[in-house]
Image 1 (cartoon, one colour):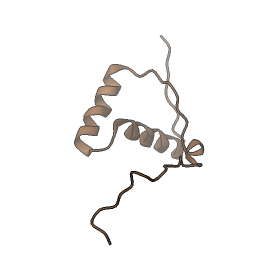
Image 2 (tube, rainbow, N blue to C red; image 1 turned 90 degrees about the vertical axis):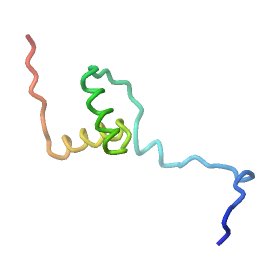
Image 3 (spheres, rainbow, N blue to C red; image 1 turned 180 degrees about the vertical axis):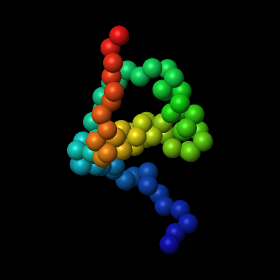
Image 4 (cartoon, rainbow, N blue to C red; image 1 turned 30 degrees about the vertical axis):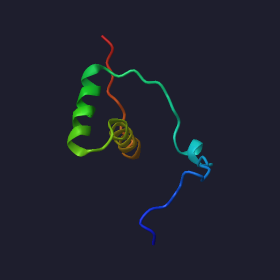
Length: 71
């Protein structure tokens, strides 16, 4: 194997399956929630958006339902 490769002339291609994997959405979260996941991100070295997504996926897998009470 070479120590270095010249990739400057290679054309990049977008992953054709990327759009099927995730969807970009806008979600409004309170500041405490964002701060919690950002701090967790610093400790784990995992981006906070990945942590939020992982937690939500866990909720889906476990079929958790939020307990909401409107005052």
